[in-house]
Image 1 (cartoon, rainbow, N blue to C red):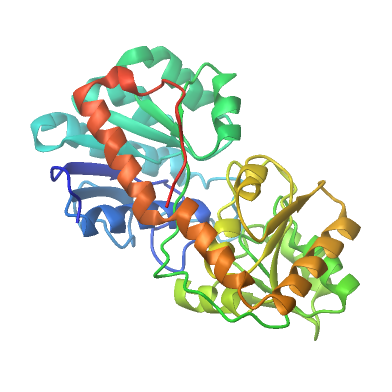
Image 2 (image 1 turned 45 degrees about the vertical axis):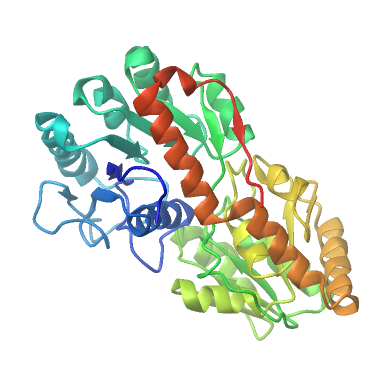
Length: 380
C-alpha cells in the first residue's frame, strides 16, 4: 500500500492490442504492470484501453474497439488497419471527452498512448497529465506537445537516450526507468540452453541469436509473438530445427520460468531500443544477458551485474561474451544471486511506481518540478 494519499488515476493505454497476459510486447507489459501496481498500492484506476484488456470496464465509454484486420492482410506491428482512424481514434476522443466532462472526478492522467490525441487534448481536460515516452520521436506527438506548451502534458522518458532524442524535437522530460515485478520474475536455477524472447520482428532480429547459439554449440529457445509475419516466414522459420525452437508467446509465469532455467539470454536489437525490457526481466531471474549496445540498452548494462554489451552486429564478440558469462555462472555459485540482487536494486516495480507517485505529487503540487531534467535511478 502507498504511504501517500489515495489518488484517482486515469491510465490511457496504447490502441493496438488489449492489455492482458500474455503481453503483446514490452509496452503492453509495462502498462499492465503499472495499473496492477497502482491498484495494489490503494489507488483508484480508471483504465482507457482496447476491448479485452484486463482492467477496462466493459461496455463503458473507456472500452475502445479492438482493431480488426482485413481477411487478406496479416496483422503486424508496423501498420494499423483502416479502422484505426475511423473507429479507434474517435472512440479515444469520446473517452477523453468523458474525462473532461467530470474533471473533479479524477486527480491525474498517466498517458501511455502512442497517438497524439491525448497530448493534443491535455490542456482541455481539466486534469493534469503525465505522458510516458516509450518510443523514438513521433512527429505528431512532438508537434502536439509543442503546441500545448506548459499547459499540456508533463513527460517522462524510459531512458536517458529516449530523453535526449525527444529533447531534439523540443519535448523535455524526466527519466523514469521501467520496473519489473520480482514476484512475477522469480529467481531461476539456470540451465544449458540459451534464450531469446520478445516480439518476433525484423528490428529485434532473433535470427542473429540463432547464429550466436550455433557458434557456441548450444540449443536456443525463442519465445514471443510474431509481429512481422513476412520476416518470421522468410528469415526465421528456415533456421528452426532440433537446436532452435520457437515456442510462441508464453504467459508471464511460463516465460519467467523459461528464462530462469536458461544459461544466458541473448538480445539482438537491430534498432535503437528506447529501453529494452527483456534485459532487466532476464536479470531479475538471475540469468545473465548479452545485448547489442544500441539506444537505451547500454544504460541498463552500465550498473547491472551479469549484463554485457557488444557493438551492433558483432556476433563473434557476442558469442564470446555469452560464453564468458556462462563460465562465470558455472564457477561462481553466487553469481546468479548477485545478478538478481542488482536487478532488484535498480529495476524493482515497487520502486518505479513509488517514483511515479512522487511525480504525481509534484505535478499536483507544483507543476514546475517536472521537466527539470532530473534522472531517477533506483536504489536499494
